[in-house]
Image (cartoon, rainbow, N blue to C red; front, side):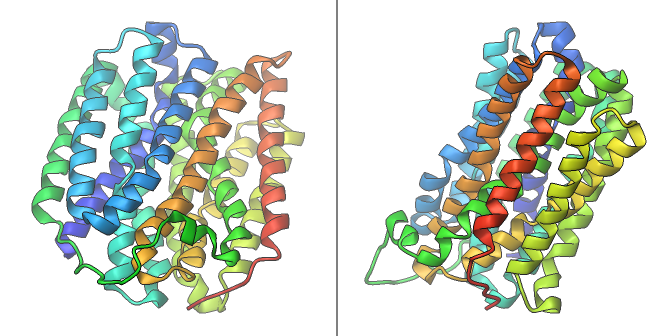
Length: 388
């Protein structure tokens, strides 16, 4: 089981890579294929939306088929096939189609791990294990920063994509060979997503689920690259260094959040305070978007560290799920988290395109992210705390 989980974690490393690599590839895709910032925002958003659209069927498959074949088949066809399509893309439409396919492929891997944790381990350590997977998986964020910039220089972007396609297919084979499904839960009630939505405690958790990952995912996944290029004139290597710093911050944040619920005796207020710090950092960027590279980098790293509450919010919601609905429960929460990020990517792309200047565009983006986080926290303040 441990070796199987390791193969799923490796797939999640690639998932984190795929959701973030456009930030570094944006200059070369703009020069080679003529993609605009709005095109790149749409492509990034489509990855998240395709990923989110798969969460309900993935949840059903986890409960009925199991994590092994759900993850292996989708990752092999989607991630490997999408990377291969990206490698031969010559138009913006083909890039967007490739990103959609990759999003479908990446959709089950984290939830397959969470399903196994929920079924095989005690509820008390779910948050720690969930944070550990995302912390290790965030190495994909790091690989999509400076290492990717160096790979682009050495092999070109098409060569790099072909290598990613081969690696993704190899990982899908490893999942099929190594993952072991937990024993089936024999229940008289089959249940559905509607049963999850009837859990009133979730109604006040889902809004923060929708916004807690949004700023770090959107900024690290796309906007950090164009922001550093448009405002500070950076090229791929410089962008790689800034994205590396933010990616390391996200790793640190995920590893730190995991055990803190047991240390502090609360999940709700841990999530609330961390995201309040994120809101303050975003407001600082909104008020001072051209303050300097060091200031901007520090605020982005702050967003990366304190915005890493995704596994803790997931653990908070998971505490209310009955055993036979764990698969559908965690994937429903993931739909809110990833789907909102995808919508935000598309919206902010058009928000920036309609701005009067580059600076005004980023002011609008940072302000939008700050407002949605604050609104999510207002609702979440009334949620029921639960630490199992």
